[in-house]
Length: 113
Length: 115
Image (cartoon, rainbow over all chains, first blue to last red; front, side, top):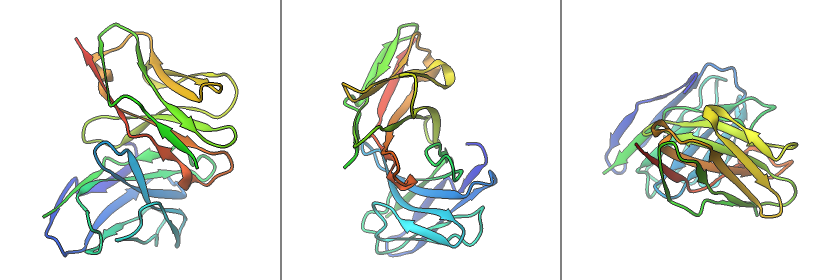
């Protein structure tokens, strides 16, 4: 998982609560990404950031928010507006010139009841 | 629109036998193709990529993949499977000149190697 940490590994929340997932990297990568993984669906891109203080929506951004105040950190907030938040969340990073070689963190499994 | 398909949810192989995990893609222009592996409750690890050049690409852990433009395929192969190869494998595609956000992942194939 080389240089990307996600915490916590497991997270439990009650419906209606916002929750923030942490992602930190020490690879000096410019770009960072958040994906959601559901069984049988592969990975879907939530948000990505190519540079500090800038980020773009991915394919399924509704109900999520992010910030990129530091190069090393890209936290994801799952808001109460996300209709089906229970999933495995993966953070990744890459260099600017090789965005296709993404390094992934170990993931956070979020369960909302 | 670009897409990638992994037609098999699960592949079962005996240890020592060759393995193939299938992937087909649809993209305009010459694609960038990738394979990633995911072990239980872990993030994905990059295995190999095809950007240009030789159609046979070699990657980590003895895996290789063959790009076949006429069949729009990028199957993952290994001559002799190990039990430790058991994991979830994802094929991914990116159209040339698109942004990093346009990497599309397949739904994954679970590879199970029996001793």
